[in-house]
Structures are given as structure tokens and as C-alpha cells.
Image 1 (tube, rainbow, N blue to C red):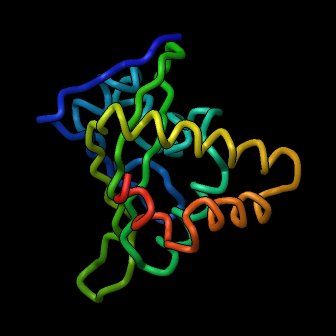
Image 2: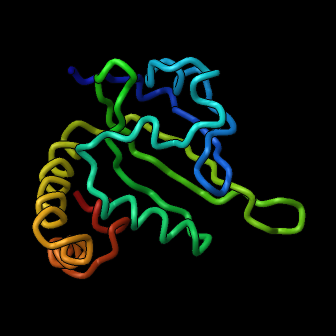
Amino acid sequence: MSEKFFSENKQIVSKTDLKGNITYCNDLFIEMSGHSEAELIGKSHNIVRDGFMSKTIFKLLWDNLKNEKEVFAYVRNRAKNGDFYWVYANVTPSYDKSNRVIGYHSIRYSPEKEKVKIIEGIYRALSSAEKLLGISAAEKKLSEMSKGVNYEKFILNF
């Protein structure tokens, strides 16, 4: 298992339906994930979820999306061969002509290595709290670590 990187001049793009099933993915998503387009389309976006990731962060992400809010988050993904790669994700709801949410659109950028080092420590602490006391304890830990500032503002201040 090794870490993969992509150029800061490129972005990983995908779209999903309301349940998180992939409806579109660009060539860089295919390349980084190691899956073919046929293996990705129609599958849950969890296909690239890395076990390192804190469940609390995904809960935060989905809570915001369900409230039709845009989300920014650091995410570690897993490729088909077991390699991993970090992204700085921007996820937004997608709307139809009647202004109803029909899915989600995500653009992922190559994150700064220094910020990833910081976020790794935070995610380890959150994962430990989850294992010991559950997600609500990890949410409380995140609030303490961020001194009450919301996650997005917190990660912008690294």
C-alpha cells in the first residue's frame, strides 16, 4: 500500500444520485481509483472509501448535504489495488429545473501535504473516539479541537 498523488492542476470530478451512487466520473477519477468506468458507474461512492477515514467526517458531510449545504472536506480514498490518495473535496447538491435536489456534484483537488499531516492527526483522534465511545463522542472531540468553530472554517485555518 502506497500513497498516490495527482497534479495540483487537475481535479477529480464525479456526480452521484441522492443515494451516493456514481452517475458520472472523469478520467482522473478512473485513473486514481484504479477502477474502470464500468466498475464505477452505478456503484456507491463508498467504492473508494478508505477505512482510515473518520465516520464523523462522513456524517458531517452527509448532514450538510441533506440540508442542501455545500461541503469542503479532506478525504482519504482507497484505490482498487489498496493504494490511497488524499483529496480536498468540494461537494454540492445538484438541482433540477424545479429546484429539487437530484444528486451531488463533487470536485476534488490535490491537497497541500502540510495540511494533510495535520488532518491525519485529527482523523486519528476522531477515529479513536469513535471506537471507544461512538460518533457523538467524536463529534464532541472535533468541537473541542476546533474550539467550537465549524469544521470548514477550522480546516481553512491550518
